Image 1: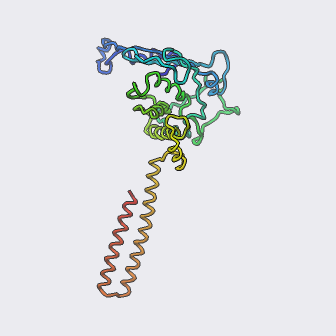
Image 2: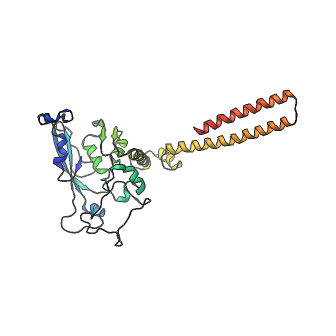
Image 3: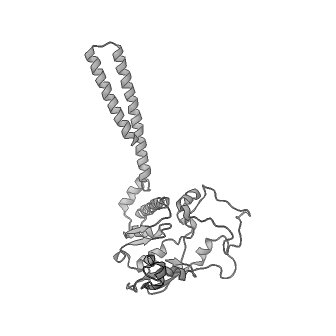
Length: 317
């Protein structure tokens, strides 16, 4: 869990005692203390990449570059010492950095309208001056308003994947991690890394819309991994196939919708054929053919109607 300074006591409250949820109010003070070990890992962010995310920085020591990762376990971790994966040093150290943050253009971006649907009731409208910016108006001196079609990061404060990749590496990766349960799945950085490393993953989103689009976003990232030379999932033959089919994963929902549309179109075409069949039958009847031939025409007409009706039902499904 990553937290800014000053939130430690509030965060660790949930690990203070065991079984509080089942203890009566008049007996909560007697609850058993939870056995735990707390390890702290300090993140040090690169000043340049952090400042690039702000409109303006000024003053002395106004760019807060520190954040703490809390690792809470029942007993001390028995992880072997290993070299860092993305940063200098080893897993024995308590400092991780410098962490270079990705630019907003490199993050998961969506339209403002879709972002509001994605966040749902979890979105809190905020206002006022951004700490350290020194301004509260737009670039041209007027208050800016976001339009529904404006594209922006879904999560402005995303750390990128390097920090999470380092944590998985420090804890032993797939050999030792049985499952990752992410209560703040956010932009899915951890979900993507677990998919790459084949680690079972459960993530909780803000809304069903968030979960649906995050799954699609993760699929796109994994698809890109297949094409990236040097990536652990890269395979030349698979990359060639992906390029042939357009370079993007198939959206099953859209694919089903297209199939339904095709089926409906076929149903309509056969309905027209059915109508033509009726017209021919009536013309033959008007010609006063013998009764045997009229009977054959009626049977042919019924068969045409049954065949057409079946196709129409299939097209509506």
